[in-house]
Amino acid sequence: MATYIEPTITDAGLNAIFSATRQGLEGDITHIALGDGGGAGYDPDAGADALRNERFRVAVGGVFC
Image 1 (cartoon, helix red, strand yellow):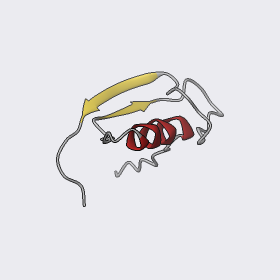
Image 2 (cartoon, rainbow, N blue to C red):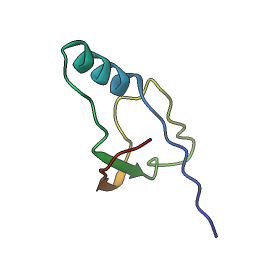
Image 3 (cartoon, helix red, strand yellow):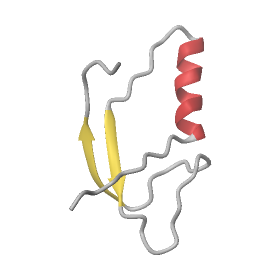
Image 4 (cartoon, helix red, strand yellow):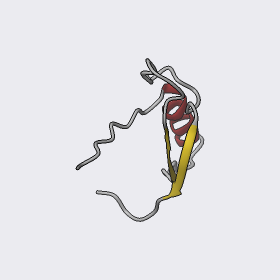
């Protein structure tokens, strides 16, 4: 059975990357974290500023095109 993951890119994350870019720095995605939502009815959106009930975090790297 396949498991589909729908990523949510938050405003807080985008703002951090844009802020770094304006300062001449680069922003890279270095980790991906997954959570179970901490209960029924959780629907993350761009306004979220933290992952609810994180269960797993993994480092990622490489060049993405």
